[in-house]
Length: 234
Image (cartoon, rainbow, N blue to C red):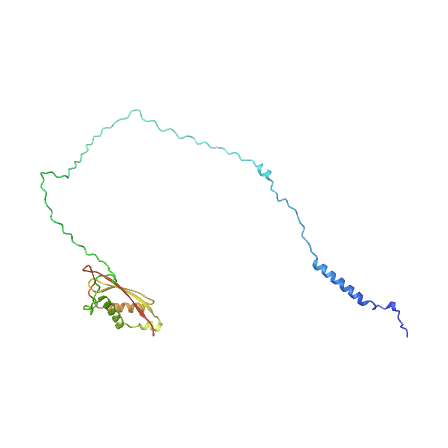
């Protein structure tokens, strides 16, 4: 049976070819659109410096101001009058201090100069005769005995402040004091982390007994001493 339509009138005959051509054209147009570049308009400017214009500037005229010369000094008077001094001046006579052979030389006895005692502080580490703690009089090494008795005194009188325990305060208090020339304790100073601990350290040192004073060259002197007191919570 023969087809009714004319083969030349078939529209779907070359449809695949037209599709490929159209797809290629679209891709080509897209590529050209992405690769298209535009540039700004370039303007040429003259950046050269016109030197002639700078050289043509006119220099302003300056006028030099002349200062007038100073006036001449006044002329000296022709006649000089001499005024006589009517007041009489007494002359002072300086007597000679040299002795003559006729004067008698009186011998002067030797002058006795009283030694002035000065308050000198001699550190405990270098003093010749260290202060003697009560109970160390018969010890050969009085320096070591002094340190041992100080430690026993602190341990015996030590009392941790209750308010410091409640606050959880602890630390080291450095105590400095002076053993006076009469053996008493004075000039107590403290430095620590809390005022309550400093007050307790001062109380302990203030209870030290009176000692035999230290001596330097056979004379009693003041001896500064320092010791740390540790406050540690259990």
